[in-house]
Structure formats: structure tokens, C-alpha cells
Length: 185
Image 1 (cartoon, one colour):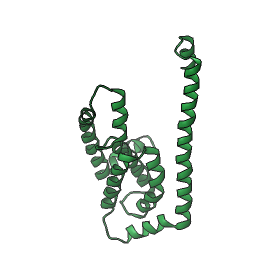
Image 2 (spheres, helix red, strand yellow):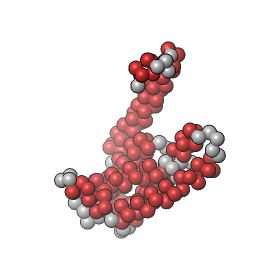
Image 3 (cartoon, helix red, strand yellow):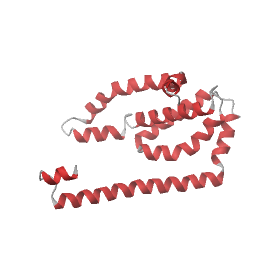
Image 4 (tube, helix red, strand yellow):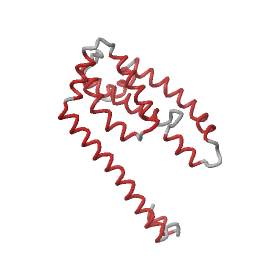
């Protein structure tokens, strides 16, 4: 793309410099998030907080699916204010030990895959959830003449279909495990 932009005159020296600076700033932000997640993971490892919370939830008597629903609700709230990479890096070291300690009637490898799929689905749903879904603001910035309320209204059908899909995957784990099993995964 760079060569095409240069050959067709779309990339000038100033645009090239601006692109490099923007790329450096974005990369720096990603590395700061990764550094923060690394520090958090080290703290969690030293504090044994994940294993303590896993034992707490395992001995709480709460149904495993209720705990998963609670995690989903928290992800939806976090999606309103955080980016997806940060959400995953911060929550998985705490959530996974809890999920691994619960009995869903599935082999451990299936629980890993199932919970990974749920996590990715919920993180992305959280990014379009009103009132502050970050991806909705990105979409709205691309269509400057469309009022924000219309953008949120346009997202609602997708949000509803995502919720139905998520409910099916949570209630029937075999749906998300069907293709990996079919292809020998």
C-alpha cells in the first residue's frame, strides 16, 4: 500500500512522517497496556488472588452458569469504557482460575475453548453496548453527518442478535465446540 500511495502521489513526505509518528504513538500505547498487564499478572501471581477467588467461588455454592453470567455482565460494563485488549489482559488472569475450578460437565480443554469463545464474544459486544460503546464512537466518527443517537439505534439490531447468539453459546456449549470437534481440534 505504501508503494501504491507513493506511485499515485497520495503519499507525500509530510504524510509519511505523520504516519510514522501516529504508528509510533499507537505502538507505544499498546506496549504500555502490555506492560501494565504484565505488572498486574506478576502482582496476581505473588498475591495468589486468582487461586483464592477460585476457591471462594468454588465453595460458594453458586451455580457455575450464574458465575459465568456475572462475568459476562462485568465484561459488558467494562466494554463501555475499555478497549478489548486491555479487558482481556486484565480479566483473564482472574477469571480463568475461577472458571477452571468450576464443574461444567465438560473436559478441561472444551471448557478452555468454550470460555475463550464466550470471552471474545462478550468483549466485542461490550464495545458496541450503549451508552458508551467505544466502537460506536468510532463508527460515528466515520459518518460525521449522522447523529450519535442514530448510530446507537443502528447498532441495536446487531446488539440483540449478538445477545441471542451469546445466550445460545452459554446455554449450549456444544454449539461452540461443534466445529473444532468436527475438524479434529
